[in-house]
Image (cartoon, rainbow, N blue to C red; front, side):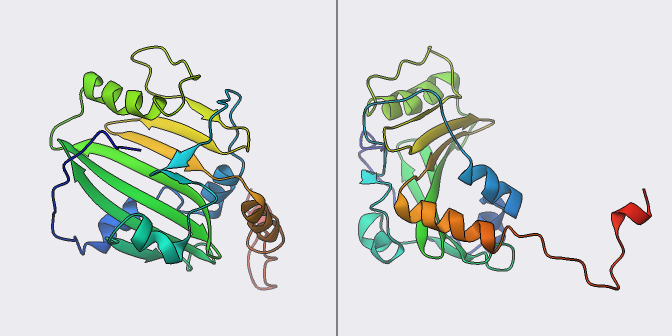
Length: 206
């Protein structure tokens, strides 16, 4: 995606696990449901890719070859069974990129890139980043200085951008393997567990 950023600066790998865990946008089952339900009305005729890869081509066992040395791997099983996240830090030009690849039962379903800098990113810099994104999808027209939008491709893959202090670019995969994982989740991790006999119920207090 960021092919226009030519020179990469090597930095030592950070071992701060809490930093990476905080960056995870899928902290709960509700967050996972929101990712699974993501849709976009605007559509491009071009295939959505991430780091030059089709979203159906991303595999955990090939990430080191596809992306490079991993910075951190999060086993998120305690909160979401089967959820694993691979984090990568990249430093290009004046920007710092934090890439996340999310897998459920070893099936890739979501990725996000956080774009930051040593100082606050200016609107001009935000525009540069998002212009680069849109070069891959020339049929998508977005007004200048609009930094939040979303669109899908003919396969139902979605790109969505978020603006806060930083710029976030989110990628939602849609393919038969992801659909299978979604169906499995409905009958397993998304099922509300019945309360044990000794557990109190909210209705007793409200």
